[in-house]
Image (cartoon, rainbow, N blue to C red; front, side, top):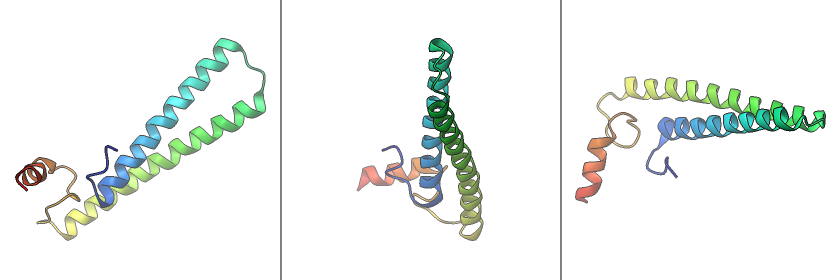
Amino acid sequence: MPWSDLEGPAKFIAICAAVFLVSGGLCGLQWVFVASTGAMDAELILTTGVLELLGMLVAALGILAGIVALVIVQIRNPGATGPQKLFDSDRDDENHMRS
C-alpha cells in the first residue's frame, strides 16, 4: 500500500485521497454506462450514485481534516522528525537505507 510507511495525519490523508479517487472513478464509469446503454434500472443507479458521491464527500472532508491535523501536529512539535512529517520524507528514506 502506498501509505504503509506513513503514520498519523499523513496516513489518513493518503487513505482519504485513495477513497476519493476510487469513488470518482466509479462515478465516471457509472455515468459512461448509463449514457451508453440507457439503463432504466433507476433505483440501483441512484443508490450507487448517491453512495459514490457520499464517499467522495466524506473523503474530501477527511482530507481537509487530515491537513488541519497535520498542521496542528507541526505547530505543536516543530522539530519532529519521522513519518509524521509528510513533506520531509527524503531525509527519512535516507535514514532507513543506512539502517
